[in-house]
Length: 157
Image (cartoon, rainbow, N blue to C red; front, top):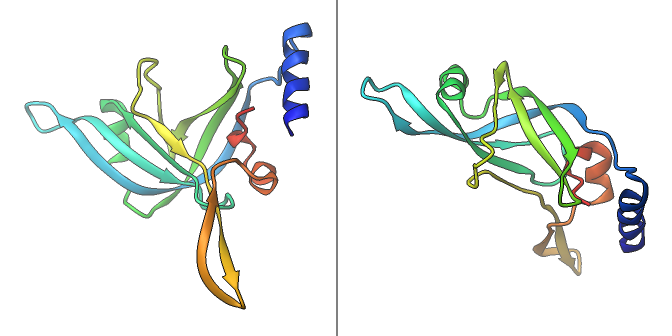
């Protein structure tokens, strides 16, 4: 895997052969929504949202904040609701890849370039079994081939 990453990096530097940006359609589940800030009339100005990807192997979570337009649009959805989502994936200037949720349901998310609060947690967990008995679990934070086959926007290198 390391050799492949090094080869891709060398290729990108030498001839600029980075993958083209892609847009993906998937489903998300709203796990949490919280209004962070309201105006004088009580209208939401900022919303914090936590999403999970039920169609992806493992436990993938995305947490981000949005402004008043996103907050007003998301108000019609409920916790636990599964919605279509759009993900934009592209090569970044630092040589890695990044993905952004651009739509949740029919709500458009416009990312704030200065936002440092948003993040995602990518992990695939498996049971640890000894003598046929589950004795614990282990979680890996590196995307597995199975995860990337089903949800390729989690690729980072």
